[in-house]
Image 1 (tube, helix red, strand yellow):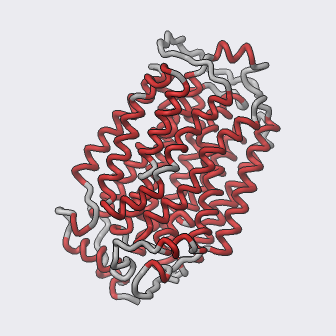
Image 2: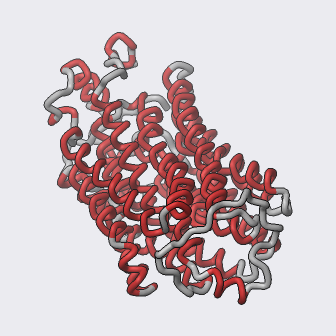
Image 3: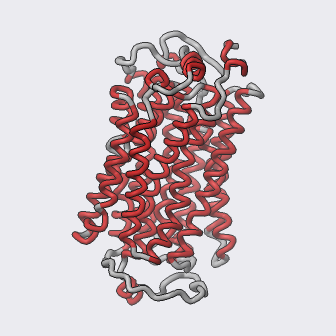
Length: 475
């Protein structure tokens, strides 16, 4: 047991630089996700519904909800005649850019420092978000191009953030710090889905992009002045905290930053276990993220304004569960001394099999809206448990190369975002409940497969190739 495991040498969490970083990075992910999902809601308003209503046999499978009468709007924003295939491509196009910068993002963050890479990545996305209404007016192709460019900007965010945490997160605080950081992604979804619905209703869909773009600019200013690449370069960190972080990490980080053991990384079985788990989890996550507003509208018959609030419930559940499970995971590792690998596997199993079961159940709720929304919420909430499972495992097996590892797993995990919505839209051309059942079954099967592979091959210790001296802790 190392001396720094004892609580006396802990640096308190309150007002600390590392928790400050966790909150600001959480705000960053909030921006990243709100810019990613706002199109899903705006899309419902961007389509020429009069044209669509005449071609579809009915506007939704279930009877539409009796809304209290709401004022009519004289919206001036343009509407477009895009068929369901075009919609699938527009919603999926973001991920075509996103996949390109995952591995370069991890490499560049290690090489040039994560702060500016992450800052400019998000700033680029903000600028293209502000240009979205112009692009949509020019045509679907231009909109797809802008979304691809947004994806390129956002692709560096997670690898850069993991590289940042490799220098900032003491091993036994990892689950806590990363879940605080990561919860911003869920909150971005939770807040931007309903808020986009309200903005579409009271203003028009173009303002969805202007409002969230402005929030992104505010974040960039804060990030520029308050965040630093490592504890050693931070001018305002307390000496006690700086020593606490650097000493807790000294045995985990490889000494030669220039050399990257690509061969060992690419052939690492524990890494491939994370890849499969990450891919599987994201299949369900992205299918819901991009198509939940469509499902609510076309099948359950909710209006765009109800739609935003109801679509956000699953992510609210996921955010709450992710933070609670992060606390629990570190408690089990630090206080109960459970091996890291057991905690990661148990959390991954719950976080992947749970969502699969409830997602399939959604397909059998018929037009029982309450039950459908409840099951979707439980499904996503349980998914939050995996945030302390395979999701953080990169930092357990190779903290020095965490950014690169995350780049690799996120590259594979982005594929579901590219093909999931396109496949789901192709399977649901008539919008029947049976067609959506197929979509849910496919997602559940992929989740079960991922959970099994990770349980068999996942590991919890720093791998020999990731560190000069062989040293393990907590396993």
